[in-house]
Length: 378
Ligand SMILES: Cc1cc2nc3c(=O)[nH]c(=O)nc-3n(C[C@H](O)[C@H](O)[C@H](O)COP(=O)(O)OP(=O)(O)OC[C@H]3O[C@@H](n4cnc5c(N)ncnc54)[C@H](O)[C@@H]3O)c2cc1C
Image (cartoon, rainbow, N blue to C red):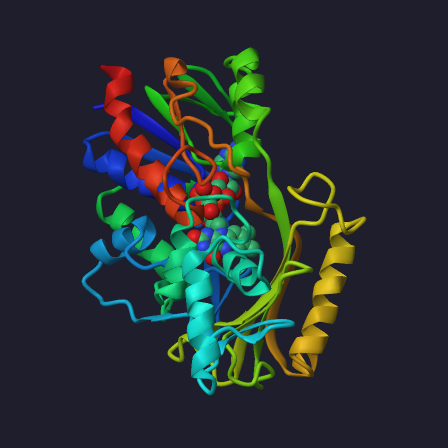
């Protein structure tokens, strides 16, 4: 049995803690912020799961499979559907009143390689422009990109309840400021001794922490990593300004708005739950620079909502927004999980090598780090 420290209580860290505990290790999880779940969570406000921008999960992907396995309570899920999705300039993707056009577009999407706005829009909606296998793009066509009645907080809650049951301690509000092979220093000045560390705290914090272990390896590993940021606005409304549509996508500007409630009617209040996102466009993001600041991008997203969801701002019940959050942190290059294994440190997160994308990559790499710990200490 090893004493394992997992740094970060996002999906990768929670999944890792579960797996490592199952393998017989003694695990502690430390989280910098006041709540667990990282970017992949939501907060229930009057029954409305307000989160960090639009999130869809893959049916039977690593996250869905783990969440299902952890509780006997059946999650109610509904897929986003192409006959209720609009791509600006092309209309509804598969209109029910035009069978010929709908079939043509299904064929176009199956072939996938085209620059047609329909293909571009569906790619954007499925993975926010990450350059991966296309797993989620195919899932969108097969009605396998889902919203659940529990919101993402429900899935995080399932992981947290399972960890609580097996006695794993999660401490929030504590930042790890330094690590070496055998100890970690915390923001409150304490040192804790460990046999192995899993860094599930995102690439920026990971880079800072591993630098003191091996600066040269750190520079070589992290120099290729690219990231894309986003701005989001998430609102609960007592009206339905998308008029029954589940999603509207602007390919040119890389904007999208989803109505979770139109996708999953068991979610939240009457009315709608809009989650809008503007992806990329800042200096340092993958792709062209379109905005001089994150605030300018957020204002452009607001204008998009004014045009596509007229009157939305007159009916707000709850809202949350953020100028800048990282949505993709690999840009096609992924870092090996064991890049610092000789220091008894493993890496986990969506940016770590795996065959999956986004939160599925986070969960997959977390679980695989949990399994690899034994090989570090034997
Ligand atoms: C707008 C948006 C839309 C998205 N849409 C989708 C989607 O549709 N489908 C999907 O599957 N995924 C989506 N994602 C991606 C998904 O949210 C992430 O891939 C996933 O949540 C990453 O989990 P993680 O555990 O790797 O990282 P994080 O969630 O970032 O967790 C890292 C944790 O580490 C903590 N931490 C950092 N430094 C320290 C430190 N020094 N000490 C202690 N703790 C620390 C942080 O506070 C954080 O809680 C989206 C993301 C965004 C932003």
